[in-house]
Image (tube, rainbow, N blue to C red):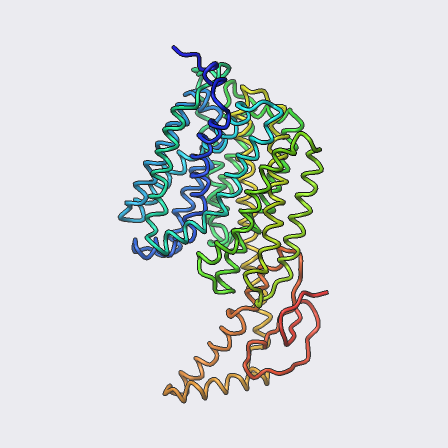
Length: 528
């Protein structure tokens, strides 16, 4: 029987990196590639768009449940075997997702896809950290971060292009050849290290049950909370209670269990504990704002899915270019300095974006997005390297599982909070506009009368023309741009004054109103 340890030593670590990252990049890409295809999926499978969103939720829930169990699964079944099963299952599920004749069929295989893909991120990170010597771990984490950070940015571009030019089914079919290549590379270059032996330990059934209950309920609650009006919904309240019971019980259980499903003792390493906390905060802050930009471009600026994806591309390209450079610098430059520059670059990028109005052009996004992409490289590479440095190799799989879980939970909470504030702010500004778009306002009355006359000239009766005039004014003032723009801006740290009557075609001037949410004529400008 060949010596796996010696075989691993004889293999160029960059070949190992390519082998594990081919499958990981595919899995991470699938977290966002489906987003732009939801309307097409809903229409083709005779479902509503809300029903189609379960294709996203089911994937994320299954992924989140398996992710923290990866270290235990690798110890129980063997890392190479687990990696092969994960990639094979993910590829097969992708093929059946593309064949889906109904929405339930698609959701079922999305669950399998998410479960099989859940272990790929921590497995790839652990393998890379163990395959490279300590002085080159920064370069290894730069390569890993390329897949983790760049793939979600390329997802909407790839999904939009495939859907527009072929079919939403190709969003899944494209995984098949990549998966086959990943399986062949894994078989050829990945071996279990000598210190990672398969162990037949007792199975912590209570830990598994509490994990499924807690993490599953939390993920569904965060994904569906805004849609169901959060705690105004009995469904969300039930999920919140189950999440608290499940996660609380899991923590107590895992601290006392003889063979825990998640080994929480890695938090005794101070660098790991602090680094994991910072990564959770980074996921919370950055992923929420990242989700907003494609929505702003498509809803307010009228971009197609492909155009929005291409406009966001500079961020991914900057990360792609900077991460190898940062990987080289990690170990040569104090990681705290790299992190500081990364946070400053990201703050500068978000401030620049906060100054945008509805007249912004595509090219105006390039500089801040490029700076943000460079900032992400300066944050992710040193943070992942320093966080996992003190962890012994035999415990690396468990540590990377928790690290990736916390990043994903931070991202989920951030996205849920951003979506909630976005909708609530939109409603607030619409309520402010409502004070001005009514018959008591001379400008509104004049505009409504003019529109009513125009509709009557088209052959509509007076009642219908009056109703359509109100609808046109309301859509123009509220839905047409200004009120909706305000729900994006607060996340960049800028308050904005809105012109309630700026969309009225005959408006020339009106005295501004003071107070919060002040309304003025003219274009949208940042408040001082």
